[in-house]
Length: 163
Image (spheres, rainbow, N blue to C red):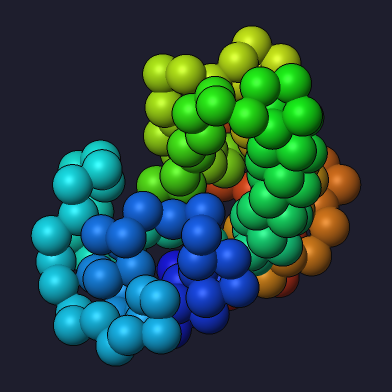
């Protein structure tokens, strides 16, 4: 995914990303300009430059995942605050996304105090995102009807243009 696309995606919900990722992308934190830095402590070592190592066609799936995650985290925070206001807030950060076995895998880092219900919702969203990526062209986001097993998910136009 292009760097500018990554920046615009992360800027929509910066609270879902670790501050080191925001710094690496040059996104302002708490209204302060951040300097571009390559230090990212929580990032897995898949790629130096990009946090979303997948096609831009899957951008809609990632955006939907972010929206759902934000919703579930808000619900969880409200429920926990009502039950026990002294409970420490669970932290969840999106570390990026990648193409794994020709499907989308969204990497999420969670704190150890996350409860089972929220954990199961996040895992279900990850699985749903992976399943949906099997029906959407990873290049242009066109619906794909038939995909050969163990092959990239591309529409006929994108497949022909890359051949």
